[in-house]
Image 1: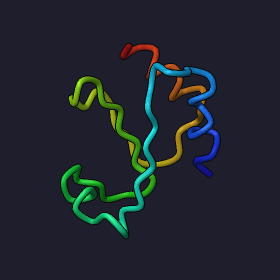
Image 2: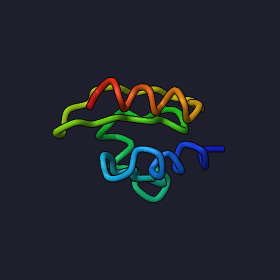
Image 3: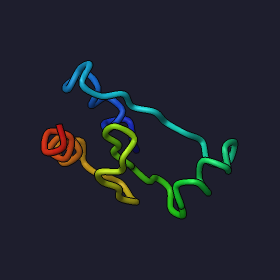
Image 4: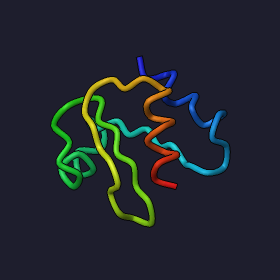
Length: 70
C-alpha cells in the first residue's frame, strides 16, 4: 500500500532520502520515535521532526508536505 509513497523519490529526486524501517525487526526505532501505528511517516529536516502522521497518505499529499518543508 505504501508503494506510491516510496516511488515519490522519482518525483522529488535527490532532495530527499526515503527509509523504510521494519519495526518488528527494529523495535528500538519504534520506541525511539514513539511509533504505535503502522505505517507511520515522519519527515525530518536537519534531524528535526517537521511532520508525522500514522496511516496511509496519498503520494501527492506527501509531495506537498515535502515541498512545504524544503
